[in-house]
Amino acid sequence: MDFNGSDTIPGPRAEDHLPHTTTAAAKIVIVGGFGVGKTTMVGSVSEIKPLTTEETMTQAGIGVDDNYGSDTKTATTVAMDFGRIRITDQVVLYLFGTPGQERFWFLWNGLFEGALGAVVLVDTRRLEVSFEAMGRLEERGVPFVVAVNTFPDGPRYPLDDLRGALDLPPEIPIVECDVRRRASSRDVLMTLTRFLHDLALAGNLT
Image (cartoon, rainbow, N blue to C red; front, top):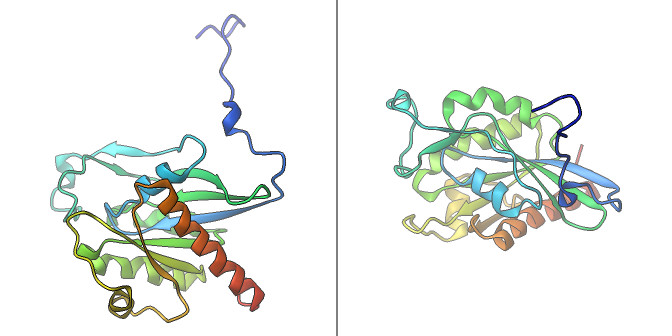
């Protein structure tokens, strides 16, 4: 690029500008194990082009990363995903997807900082990996909802059974979703915002 003025660095697209009607914004983290659909959720629901930090998976991860149920996955998030969505003309959610591989979990605490709430994405083929995410959110006092991503080859269970298996308190919402679909991902975020609203009304949101 010629820095003498003949070429210019392109600015943000018109659709990337924050709407002038925006009066409030909140940080939301989307967390879960490897391959549960975090990057897909951010990409499907974001109204701006999402920022991703995916890198090609290599043989160096064999024996280190647990990719059970994600055998066809060829890339993985190594830092975060980022997107944005308006839920009203005044309120914007900034979405931060966490890396799922265990060797990158040390980045979670930084991404949790300042978060108003979180979505824990669950794969019924690997329920056990969800406990670490929920435990860390509870330690940091970040309210969360659980969203069960329905994979075509994944077993289906009643939500009440999954609530019991995950040892979820009755007040924490749990919903099914298909993160490939924008409407489904948006419904999950609306469930979270309603939950946060109820906590605020009850004086339980810090």
